[in-house]
Length: 399
Image (cartoon, rainbow, N blue to C red; front, side, top):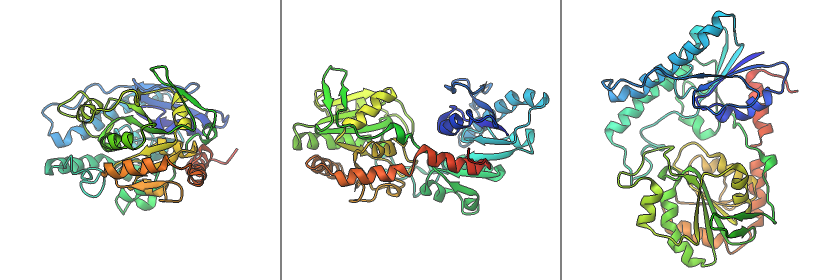
């Protein structure tokens, strides 16, 4: 089989299936990604770059769609020379969220097109209008509705689609849901697990150890979409309640979702200005290598995960697989994996006082049963389970 993999930031969510398939002699792989994509060793990567951005006179509601057309055009131009030399993929597995696959059915009409359908936007009832601190304007809702033009086309011209959670599936239009399979791509559970001897050396030289009252928090970037503002507002009370506790925060200062604050360089600066904390007890590690990230989870006594009703972070599942005791927001899709009092604890996303109280109480007990149940839940999201689902999607037999 000739399989074409496409992701703007390749490999992105296609990493596990790509690493698996490159080992199979019956699969010929080619990947496509932007010129900034990291790539994956052992897989040829064809890079593209749109020749321009959206025109400044384009209607603002259409900027994202014009950008998608430009991405699709760039991918089409990158692949056309191969098509002219006889390249014909049997299947295309792609994240279409930036427009890359818009015109590929015209170039490869016989190929099965399988989309990773990550999200379908809503002006009401999901992430956009969730946080009253950042209200959605009518103009913002109109932009989101227009933005879905791309995602409707992606659903329409795909032969199959896949989405990771029931929540994300429920957001897609009812007419298309039967063609969208729910299949999480999986996490590396075999690399994760509790380690009673785990240590973490902080930038200031201090060493933290498993068994100490350590609270962890992880996000790609520290921002309201992942509840960073609620965490920071909870910290003063938590630090008073548990004067022996240490807080370890992992994440960058960029913007993955939403927008940057207007009155500060980033959310960390703004929230530290509003709620100063003791730097000897609250440790911002920034973005860290995977091994350090794994140590953070292994020394953690309580892991905090907060999110708007949005896509589910791998980090929650990885914390569960590491045997962390979880305190998480009572939001979709968190409720798909955390059952309050069974494998973790849920708390109101906006209630900083309740978050501080729940985390402080969790530090008082081991919560061994919750930890074990969390690991058992995470095991269902293993890479092996994800690969099995993706093989079925591609019509591939097991090895």
